[in-house]
Structures are given as C-alpha cells and as structure tokens.
Length: 394
Image (cartoon, rainbow, N blue to C red; front, side):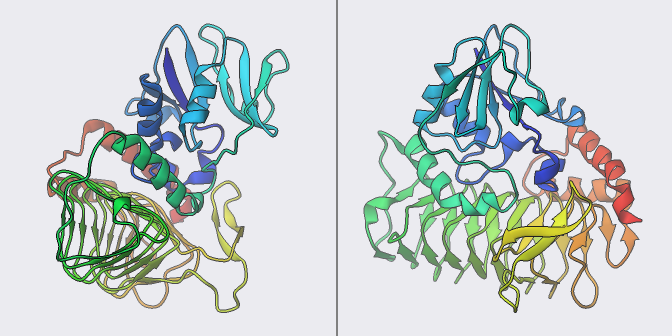
C-alpha cells in the first residue's frame, strides 16, 4: 500500500510556491504535508504532480494506492478514514473530494477532484477538514498545523529542559525543545498556543515569541526578534525583526530588522536588511494579488495579505513590498520605490532578466553555505521554470 498526494488541480492556484514542488511538499507547520501523512499512515508517500517535477518527486507504485488531495491538512481521524477506503470508494466531505481508492493502476484526473466519477462509491467523512488551496491558507492554517504536528512528533517523549534565564507566560508544558535546541533570556508566551524549537535550533537573547510557533532544525531567531504567532519557520532559517502570522518553508533568511506579516516565503530566499512588507491596505479593503490561473491581478477575499515569494528569490536592502505582492522564483528584487505587485520569476531589478546560468551559479553558492548540493534534478526544475515563466518577463 502507498499514499499518493495529488496536486488535485491546484498547481496553478498555489504558484509560485508550486513551481518547484508538489502541493504535498508545502510546510504549513512543523512538518511538510507529505511528512505528516507518512507519520500518520506508516506508508510510503509519493506524488501526482506536474510532469517536470516527477523526476525529483516521484509517484509510488503499490497493489493498493490511496490517492489523497495534496492540500489536506492531515490528522489521525482523517488518516484513519483514508486507510479504511476500499477499492472503488471515494472519501467525501460536504461535497468536497478528499481521497480515492481506485482499482489497480487507475489514477484520478484533475476533473475528478471537483466531480468524482459516478461509478465510485462515496464515503462521507463527517469531521471538519482543512485544505491548503491558496498560498495564504498556509499562514491561516499554520496554528492548527503546528498543533497537529506537535502531537505527532512529541507523543511519548519529553522536552529538553528550558533554561531558567527565560521568562514563560502561560503553560510551560506547551514548550517543547528538541535535543540540542538553545533558548536563552527570551520571553515565551504559550497563552495562544504551543512553542516547538527543533533540533539544534537557537532562540537568541531578547527574543519575544508568542505561540503557536515552530522553529525548524538548525534554524535561528536573531537577537531581539519579535514573533507574533501563528508562525512556522522551517529548517535552517535565519529570522529577525518583527514577524506576524507568516510561514517560511525553509533555508531562507529574514535576518534583519523590518516587518513581515501574513506572508509566505519559499526556500532559499533572502530579504535584505530593513525589507518591509505591507499586509493591510490603507483603505482596510480587500487585497488584490497576482493570480497565475487568470494571468492578472485578482481579488483574494483577504484583508490581510503581505508577500508570497517563490524559492531562491532575494530582495535588496530597504526594499518595500506592497500589500499582496507576489514574487516568483529566482527573482532578484532591487531598485527605487515599490516593486510591482507581480515580480516575474528570474527578473533582475527593474525590468532586467536574471540569466539562467548566472541564477544557477548563485543557487549553488547559496545552498553550499548550508552544505547542500544543487542537484541535477534541481537544475532541471529551475531550468523548466525559467522557460515556463518567460512570458511574464516580457
């Protein structure tokens, strides 16, 4: 048996984050969605995604495959419902398709996720479910994801001791430090949710943290950081300044003063010193943001929305991002005034193009600093994204 996480027709709706990964590799909390499914099911997890991503993120073959909506936030009850499906059944929740158990090698098509075939037997899942279907759902579901993940990874285990140099507001039992985690002379508030500090991660002196909060393996909160939860920062991130309700998928830096709010950053991003994001219009009205499915700015239904940035993008010092800015992959953002609301992938400053080979050289140098290689698969994916996004640069 195996779990197959499907993009479920959401690839375009979750760009630019899904230019470089399937939907199931997004990280709304401590774990990626795929990691959470693997822990809950005990089964190997594969992906049904775009053709150019399949070499790096392969499918799984098995006699029985449970094909699951990749944006589902997994929990024990949901996992049990999926694993209880029999061949020819589809798991539903109030008209929404959650998972298929198809016969043999059959696989669901994009259309099936909105209109399941009539020959399948529907099985209703009564409990509430939560779906990542747009980029802002990552920070909106962050607190719930942290709570779910914390239960998965800490069950039957004990936290490492917290240094007496810290001040705790709320229940100290809601703070969990993994082995090698360091937290000194900081204020930790669990009144609104738990705080998890990953293996070898560090919270430097003078930080103020409100849960729910997750700091991934090897990551750092810089001195005096002010973090308003829910926030989740993945492995090896460097975070400073003021951050509110934001998700950073991993290996990215916002190491300096400046505000980041209601935002999502991919991997290997870097925000220069004093970079700031607006997350609320002066009119307090609905935020418009670039919609890749429509190829234009479109209403989001959100009042609070800051920056959505794809992998390997960077901003120069003192960059000011307008409300609802969307930056693609490998964008090098600098120049006078506010950048445009849509910053194309592989853009260079004000109107230039970041040559592919130059961008790949930078990616390699950046990843080597974290002792990770830029693999041939990574190069192929980024090269494909370069060509897919050419029309936006002209």
